[in-house]
Amino acid sequence: MATAKPYHTASVVSSLALPVDPAALAGRRLEAALRAAASSVGALGVGLRAAMYGWSVQLRQAQRLPCGRWYVESCPSYVATVEGCTRWAATLAWRFAQHLVGWAEVATEHARVLGAQLRRIRWGSRYGRHIVLEGWQIAGLRAASGASVCQSADLEVEAADALARLRAGSRTATIRCPLHDDNTPSLVLWANGGAMCMACEQVDGTAPRWAWLAAGHKVRLLPASRTSTASQPYRHNKSPPIPAPGPARAAASATGGPAPLMGYSAPVGGCVLSGPVRSGHTIALLRASISASGRATTWRTPGNRATGGVLVALQRAERLSRTPAAAQRAHDAAVFGDGLPARAVLPDRLLSVSTMGRAPHGGWNTPQAPRCQDWVLVDIDDIVLPDDVTGLAEALAASVVMDGEASGRCAVVRTGPVGLQVWVELRYARHSAATWHQQPAVRAWHAALGARMLAAAHAHGAQGGHADASACAAGRFGRRPGWRLVDGTPYRAHLLHVSC
Image 1 (cartoon, rainbow, N blue to C red):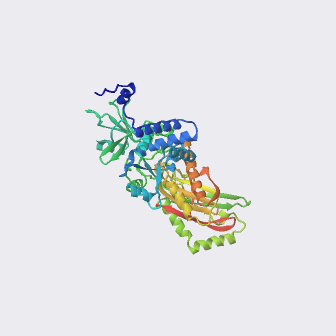
Image 2 (cartoon, helix red, strand yellow):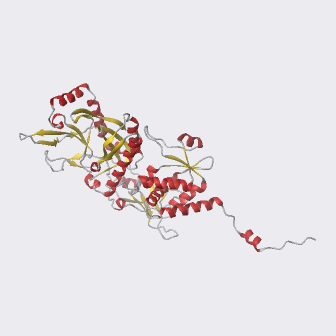
Image 3 (cartoon, rainbow, N blue to C red):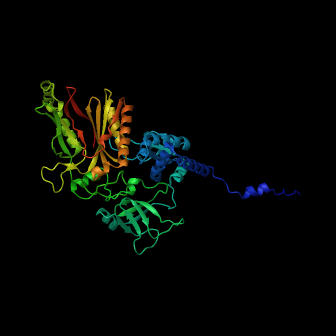
């Protein structure tokens, strides 16, 4: 008769231990490593905190591929749009995270072959980077960035009356909370895109919070990130509701009605305008005159309203400057105006970057002052451009599309042999142009935008140059296409690229 094998302590313990999932363990290790690196001081820590702030939104929209992996679109330029994060910090964070996580970046066609549903982009635009992740990789990223939250799924709540109040200008509105049966609406919607229930309480004692998006007559509640805090301009933003970007804002301006409301985070500097921009841009001339004593004086004409907006004014000036008559006048001015100030014989043609208007109770001769800001100007001086500037102009336009503060509409004007000006439409128009420009966050964003454009120009063969910081101010004027005298030689400032 065979004897039974004796029990050993090791065998008893091993039989009671739960199996360890290697993928889950790898995800937890990845989360810990990312959190540790993001808590560091320096550019890498700043970039990682900005990356996780952006990924907390993007990872919620990750697509499950038929092969079982996950697809996300992102890029360092998107990370650099987070306030306080430079392009250098974003690049450092991207390289570190790619090495740590080990994700795969694939081409656009490869992403389509894998089954990813790519977003539709405008002509002249381009995608970010197509990232393919394993399950444990996206789990670790979600846990580190706060994209994985306790609430099981997004919620949709009927909110027709609340949306009507917010569109009418109210800063808050209440709806019924989907988490409990409340007779009196207790879930507060803020016009800046946040929401919180004043009656519910979570396990940790805090009230549940969401970010919300308008979906027809309903509100879609998205779990809010716990890893980020409001920026300084966000805390001080006392602006009315935020209008929808780009074409929706243009449609609202055409009809004279308020723009649709959507749940977005506060744009840089606040001062967001509710409704259409009612003031217009001004076209003017910069002339010079010589007094009897021989002293030259430069002055700007009062100007006229630019009908049709910035892009229409620039394209109209481009057409007029290409005529043989305009070229002949410029050459005549160079010959007969020899020895005189250039602007005395051939004035500069200008267009205001801010919308301009007179004081409400001023007379007809009251000087015009800046009102709103729906465009900004990036002025790049002393740059040596290559012979072929087509690719360079398209790269500048692509850098505009990737910026979260821009609508995507832009124009690139070559102002001289060594000068460029890029007109960029803001996603959200701002009121109080002078107040908005004075904020440090706005100046920092404008400087970062200029640095990205300068880097894009260098990547396409340009050399030298610098972005003029004085262009970030209310009441500035940019140059329209047209003839001018540069060191006594006629030169036609001309459009290189227009993105409508």
